[in-house]
Image (cartoon, rainbow, N blue to C red; front, side):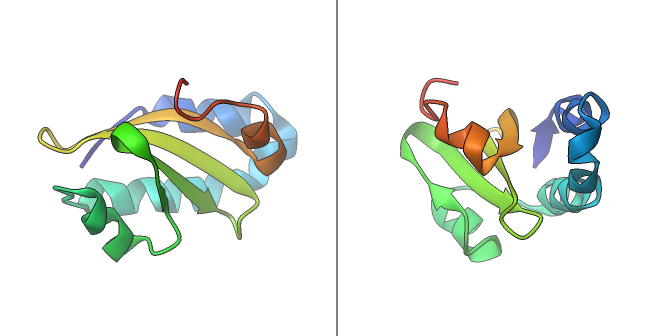
Length: 100
């Protein structure tokens, strides 16, 4: 999968030093996605059993022992993953996951 964009992940821990502990888990997640080849939501669940599959290609991943969440939109035909949100569970609770 092609992941858009690594800079979104980096900005999360660089701009907010209190989230520096997200760096290693986020980069590990990013590397796994680069090796993935998902054609449908079931493929995501096969690789990440804890991922939450939402409507319209949205998926929520928990990283760093469920401390952080990453929301993506996946274009399955083109094998592209767009990072839409990176944050804590509290920050996640304040967004509308279907509109970000």
